[in-house]
Amino acid sequence: MSLRDIVFNYPAIDNHAHPLLKEEYRRSLPFEGVISEARPNAIGDAIHSLPGYRAARQIAELYGLDPGADWEEIKSHRDTLEYDQLCDMNMQKSGIQCLFLDDGLRGVQEMANDLGWHGRFTNDSVYRLVRIESIAEDILKSLPPTGRDVLVAFASALYTKLRDLARDPVVVGFKSVVAYRTGLSININSDDVSNVERSIVATLSSWKRKAKGSDVLRLADKPLNDFVVRTALSIATEFNKPVQFHTGLGDPDVILTLSSPAQMQPIIEAYPKVTFILLHGSYPYSRDAGYLASTYQNVYVDFGEVFPVVSRHGQYAVVKQLLEMTPISKIVWSTDGHWWPETFYLAAIQTREVLYEVLSEFIQKGDMSERQAISLTKKALFENANKVYNLGLKRVWEE
Image 1 (spheres, rainbow, N blue to C red):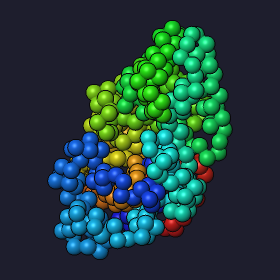
Image 2: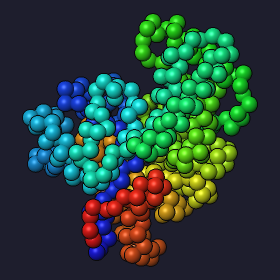
Image 3: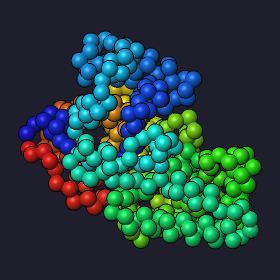
């Protein structure tokens, strides 16, 4: 088969996404969120960007509308579709065979479907990614904010909970959003007990004082955040579970200047038996991610989320920058799909378009053969994730 056949038809393992909204919440969030994670008062401008224009055209074509349809026309049309039909149209066109879902995103428990519901769109099981900060926050809310015992109680509960989750066959790995909270320069010193204790007490005291009964507790104090990460990495070592880290772009809460994976070198070296997955192509720090993946045996790069929130030219640059150094055996793919089924469709179709363009250029310039480009495609979309997460899946598509 040709490179085009493989790129546009090979099944994919989506190694990082989030659940879709329940039908009753389908109109509860701004639909423009499919292309942007801007704040609500800024997200309306996203439709006037290159990613916005391209996404509108592709969604319009999927729904049989005029390619020039604007966002209001698209939203009006999708409101006429049955929700199951809407989801099926997008998910079936994505070519995704297997889904990994992080269900720790705030609002998921109330507004989104559970993991099992998503099984209708895959040929294999839907796997869970455990967001470690969400687990830690739930544990903290059950503890009294007093004395040294609170550290012992928290550490014991966190260790036990994460070990239990690591044993769950549905849990394929852990995920950290420490980049959103205190940054990726993670302290490797496990003797920092007094600061961790003070951090726990301060976090609990602030929550109980300000929240006034609210269920929202945010883990955002560096000694405590770093302790949670180190605990998860220790358990990941024991159970051979990959750990994903949000790197690079995200919503406005991310500390962009602290989200480069280059800051993770000490923690990567401190846990050589842990497989680190650097999410989202680390945009705009893609070269940093590629360098780490080429230098450390235990580092892999995911090239998701830039599809569709970055322009075609930007996506093209990200893929080329990652491939400047990254071995093809160290690349995995994801949609970072969430809330709306269109996020999965757009990520999948745009990934395949840009991958084909980049690899075709490499072939034309003599940087690789078509056979090598086909091998890269298979590994990036399916085979690498199948191996690194120990899935043992068989492809549903025959060449």
